[in-house]
Length: 337
Image (cartoon, rainbow, N blue to C red):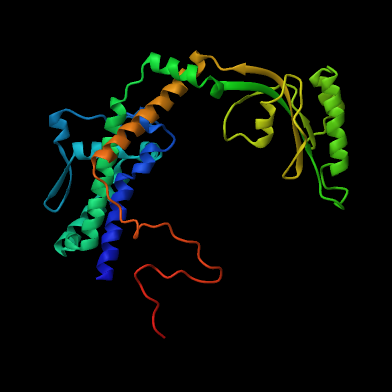
């Protein structure tokens, strides 16, 4: 029976390889709340001959492939191609569709043989089939709900007014000094810790006195060892910011953060200015946030209506294993010697 299960798994793997129906891949690199059902947000424009649009009925019903008594129409293949990820479709544009036909034939040959051997009646196969169906249906419903989400300009304005601080920005100049370990050889690039701190203090003093940053770069910079940004860069307020940048938001214009030792370097920021992103510049970002929130609220409401029950004894959080021991799978007692 195990060999049959492995063969069932192999058939399923081929099917998934050809159709590439993995739900997570369809959302990679995109916001799922902004996708239309059945469409990838990161998909490139269709390439003639490789990513066909739905054809008319006569063309769609045209038989393009047969395996035994089973026929495959152009509509079937067009749907499959539209389901492929952009990278695979680009490969098809270069290689043509003949290779895809060979892989599809292989899938059907193995699937028909599996059916003759009644592998489709295997319990594990039925479970996998049901799981695949549920995943695809769940994805379709998620996309349908996302399509129904509406965000108005008033919603966006209200969010901006209530969360304005989330869009605060600073302009900051970073100063970085590469350091080397104590007792390092002469040819190891970098400054000693003492030299690095002294160089940072000298740079800080020069910038604080009003010296042109470009002149500071000439006076103190060392390629690949002492780096001073002549032009400040914007940094947006965020809970995920490193500690140095979080500290910078508390400073006034012209002030410096404390010197930080970070992975073999010394780093410091000079705050040059404070600002807040305008509504027009962040409206799309806010819209995506609100779409996601509304979609999550819709899904949460569905869960409430679905009368969910979970066996907490079975699904309990696993405790950390004792060092040096191998956890025993739940429900399987240790084998007797």
